[in-house]
Image 1 (cartoon, helix red, strand yellow):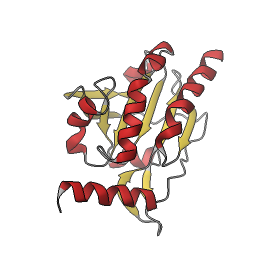
Image 2: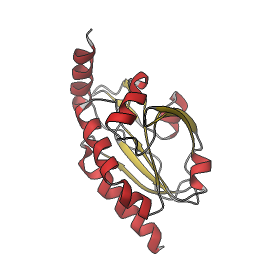
Image 3: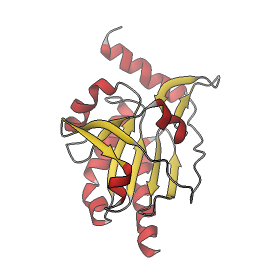
Image 4: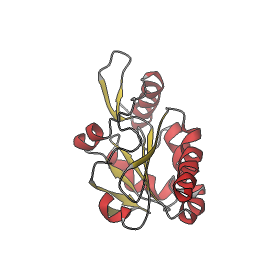
Length: 181
């Protein structure tokens, strides 16, 4: 299957699939993880525990690089990075879909402004982000789910919706609520 046909098939599958209903409730301890990925086209290792020492973390899962909704979401996060920085937050995007394209995606769609990483099977399970088909079986990719994790390592917000438009605004609102205490 040609890459463009494969991406189109994945995009239509994601639209037909059901979003995961994240089971990590507000106040739960975020599972620790270390993930390999890229930022600005260069390999990185992202460690949640190290990032939390600096401040809150916005952990957003997306189905696959270079698909229409994921492009919009990454570009929107990139444009909002000054607001995330002002809130003292680190942003990372994570996917289980076409991870071989993360370096290119990090440079082009994320504009080098934040890292993207590959989700392990354990991470998908820990964060309950396995995107399901209508019959309940796995698509093999991650759902579009965003977590805001407070510096204390606890979930401050979770938002799961396949439409990319509200993930950034919901994350920023949750970070403002964290600041207010």
